[in-house]
Image (tube, rainbow, N blue to C red; front, side):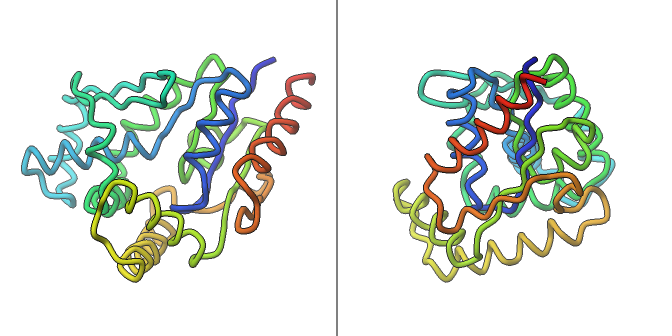
Length: 223
């Protein structure tokens, strides 16, 4: 039986890279919950809605449409029909998404949508509260982590490829602040589920992580 695979962990731990590859490896859907919050953040900034305006964000979430589409070259994020895949990957949107994700009303809208998308199983769901809140009853839970220095280096290299001018020090400082924000929020803080398998990716290649988790998921598929 196909599983709901929950992949949680902080920014830069390798969740997105792993989840994309794992979805291809197992022929599952890649459900990037973080991208959904990023899309909300982008919509809020465009609409001039304050990131701490609970009522405004609640109304915004009720009106916007977020869709995820899997294509051969990766996941496409659609906001009201517009491809915003690249627009939501900036440091500004990263920090803004951390702010909106702390709003209970926003999380309520997104969790409902995520559960609808994953209801039939066969999904690799990545985020920060997938195993603890969105799909707490799934058996396939993994918590990815890596040292702050390694996570910052990975994000810095990713931004360099996009010709961003952020320094490694800036990326590290922003990542450290986001870690604090995500872990300290009152609603669904970043944490590993008690029954999640913890995987330190600091010294592992993406291929090694994918292969190891794929084998665990296959064992669960057999019952």
